[in-house]
Length: 184
Image 1 (cartoon, rainbow, N blue to C red):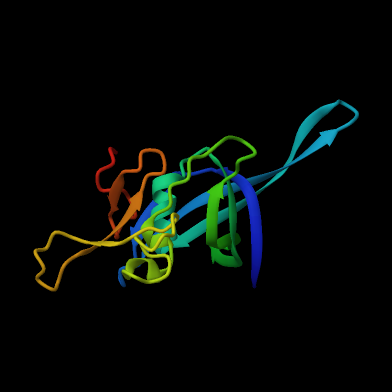
Image 2: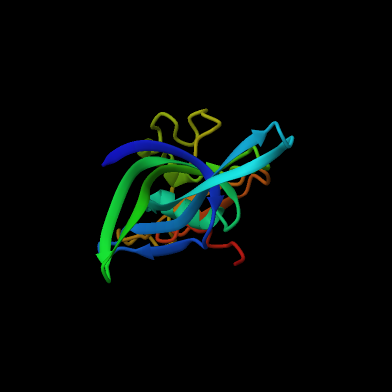
C-alpha cells in the first residue's frame, strides 16, 4: 500500500542518521500522533489513541532533519505511507512507515527560525547568470560555491546558505547536511 499522508505529532526518538552503501544520506525517527478531543462533560481536553510511525527521509531532507529536528518537538510530516509486516517467534508485527517528502515544526506549539540552504533550491541557483542565481536581482536566491581546492578541476563542491538573522554565509557538509562551522 502506498498512499500520501500528512501527520501531526511529536518526535518520540533521537534522530538516527546513516549513509547507504550507495552514498545516499538517510535519517529516521519515530513519530507519535495522539488524538485529542474536548470532553464537554468534564470540560477538559482528553488524549485518545496514539498512532506510531517510522519517518524516513533521504538526501538533502535527511541532512536537514538531522540539523533541525530534536526528540520531543512537535512536527508535521508529509509523505507516502507504507505498511510493513513481518513474523518473529510466531507473532506478526506491523509498522507504518512514512517516506517523507517534507518535515517541519508544527508552529501551533511554538515558533521557529527558518534558514534556507543553498542545496534545497533549484540547481539553476548554482549557475551564475541563471534565473534565481546570485547577482541577478533575486533577493531570495542562494549560491553554491567551489571549495578551496586550488582550481585542480577536482574541487570538492560545498553547499552554502546565508543565515537570515546575521546575513553571514556558512558552509554545509554535503554528506551530513550539517553546518561545518556549527558547534555540536
